[in-house]
Length: 504
Image: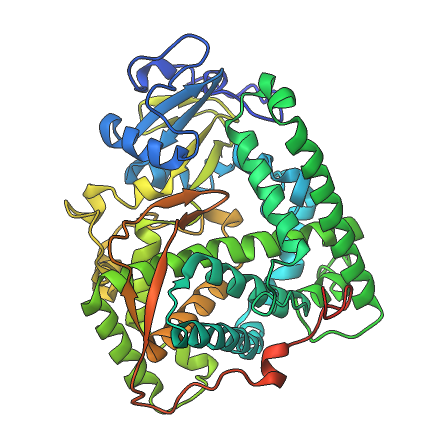
């Protein structure tokens, strides 16, 4: 193949025909229409699930086009493993991620590869996810989970089903706010969401709508939404800037915000600029709660549908934690079967449903498909996780034993990618896994989970995937161990908002 010309790669969305010289060899859905493309039979609210359905028919690599935008999708394990090769491919800030740049700028998740603040931010923040740092976050994770349990106890006593996605979102938002920034949104005590949460959800919803509205029509169709989004962005920025100013006059507890303010990059002395600190805070608040809340919600759904799995997980919790009312940091990693439940839920429904990769230089994918430098493909993670060549003919079946140690060792690398891949993979992976395993252990120890009759899993697609309308009935267990303490006012209240006060 000819050597790369090293031309300047344009920013913004690049349709596939610009980077794939033999694009015609990649299949696409039938009945493609002029101008609008592959829109027959699709639902703009479920692009990921539509792509999964199309991928089942068309194979491990396919393409979709709508309103002049064409994307190559990859779901086969062999091709995904190639795209994970850091020597040939790098992260691509694709359409969905690029639409978040007005929110998070050059934060860790949304930065372009050439932007220096990505590496600087990574170097400054990576120690914040060390084992020592994680052990420091553990008591705060416990405290927030106890607030959730107090809320669920009240709902159970009143005979009401619990709103799983809503409550998991409150839990994970409070956890990242407390551990990362010493902030308390008071989610479980408020009748309505905190205004910051409302603004954050608004900006994410707007970004999602920009993914599916054709560019020529966006100014007309999204005129009101664009004005609302500008107001939401301004509120987010003002609130975070005030939080940072307040922290500069006080001493924190060595959390992520302290690291952003006080830590210089080893060797160079560089520090994060104030604007980038704001962007990193917003990045962690968004990414640090959206994905974990979905993972917990899917896991609780599957536990409610598989009583045998729930019983086995609960027996492990009772055996490993024994009579310990508040498990220590090291006791969480010993819940190996609970972790398998979590991993299997992330396999079937990875809450970050895709990641994009671009060619570092001219190359050929799978020995068949030429790619120019800068050409990119979207790895559909949920399709990769269902590849029957890796997971078997029953890949759609929920089975946590797929993640026992022997099964994991028998699989090739790069077949399980719920946190992305390579240098730009999720920096908070261990944080999320520890938090989710702890929460599942505490909930299994306290409750029997009952699915509501007639519920069938529906998956909502926003920035991440989430079970829609999932509610569970709870039965308090007859405790075989010392009961988990809840509603300790000194523990539950946490640090109040240093910007807006306790009443916000």
